[in-house]
Image (cartoon, rainbow, N blue to C red; front, top):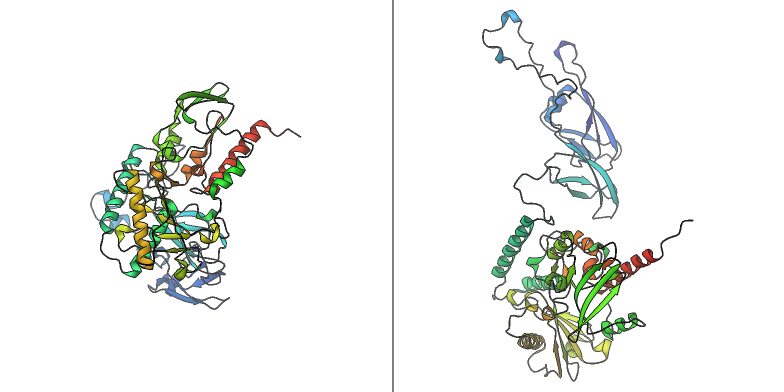
Length: 511
């Protein structure tokens, strides 16, 4: 058994004992931990009986190898022969083990439970990126196994999914559809929130820890929620699908993009959807426009409502959404992120920061983490002295009495951060002040989705599943497993559902 542990060594059958009571040698086969060359070694009886590891060298690369044989491979003394019947001591026959019971007619003979299980794995090396496929002999209860990359020989640890069925009464895994899972997720989230509240105090942060809190704030910005709400396993499941290239700002905002995409379409603004009903030949949508009811009928409807609106139950579906989809809506999270836009007569920040596009600010304590933590310089992209400032995590959820008070508090916190960076006298009064409160917007109720505690990345796929014989389709960032929480994901999901409709209207003709 080597540190490589690529697979259990295959051992030849033991040779019969030689005459004179001496134990014969044995042949073992294994792989070199450096060059992966298959090696065969003949061990003597004294080597088999030795309690110390056996040392040898690879015939290909010369690496020194140490072999630890399991106890079953050690030379065992030959048991003494049983005494003859005439010399047997008097007593009950139970002194000897009873013979193994014979299987019933047509039944299989009883066998001992296997000590190891052959498992095949596929993964990529974290060092060189090589695609690997290998087989390991693992104990049934093992959680991890170790091996080496065949290309760069980097040490790898493989997580082994459990083969044991869940014990009666044990908590189901996160993502399972059950009341117990929801209760488990709520308990974990509440405990994490309590721990976060205890740790994020008003005590001043030293610089290294303040930088760590800045990166945590950036993580809360990327997910639109506080850290305690995120699934530790699935929060970054979409990272492998990230787009390459640099970051760009749209001078006209997303409104300019929407105007181009919506050109030539019949878009009805001011219509609030109340009910979506299944009809024998399509879908019926009931809406309200200025207090007057409006009804739309169609062969197919695409629901792109934000996840926050679906979670709030603001739109009624008849028949109701199936439990599978409703549970995915409940499991996924939908948080908040807010921005403050400030305009000035001149770009005073360029005297110190120059023309850089953005910079960050570390909060003085953990309680203020995420407060005005990142500044975007819009001077170069818009030609106007504008700053866009992000408030994430706890700082995005202001607890003031009214929305206007919350906006004023966010603007004051932003100005305090600017004065802490540039000095009291260097920061003039703003000529423009705007702040968002996305969590209070009736038609969004937040910003974008995240994988919360108890949810998995599969919930995005469940949310994207069509219903009612493909007459009700779903789109939006919360239906994009590869690009959630992005405008690109929402746009691509619309193309996906448009393609689904096109395939239904123009089926491929047989050739």
